[in-house]
Picture (cartoon, rainbow, N blue to C red):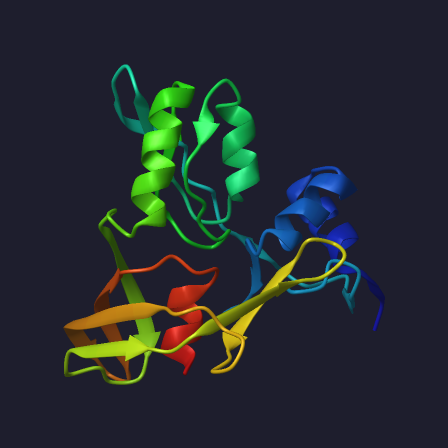
Length: 201
């Protein structure tokens, strides 16, 4: 069986550059069947057929003299969104695979006020998620989270009762289908990867 690097096979299939193909795989947009391709340089059959997910467009959903609200699609990083609105001041971040609202301040005075509101947990943050397992009751998860960044700036978070910072997540069931649940999640705090870490726990 003839093999080649996954990104090279994808580049030929989609008639795009090797660099673009590698970027699509790194963003988590490429699948074989129902499995995501994780490693761009992995060896794979040259006859492999990929499916490539489109990234939804960025949309401005609200703005006034002080604030800009942007609908961030999944598979774009917060930094990529920030670059597109570089004249404004970023107020919150979302994980790459999370879609949702990112806020930008249009002036430093509003930025200071907004940071104060976030710091004192006076910003209401609501998410909708689809998770493995049957969630049929409301639940409050209160477990401290420790986040450590490596020398490349990649953050890892985990439950740590001794060194972690306090974090509260409220879970509300919406729909159960098979062994998956659609839930509403409200977080009182905003720790890195909080929802994922708390739900995994």
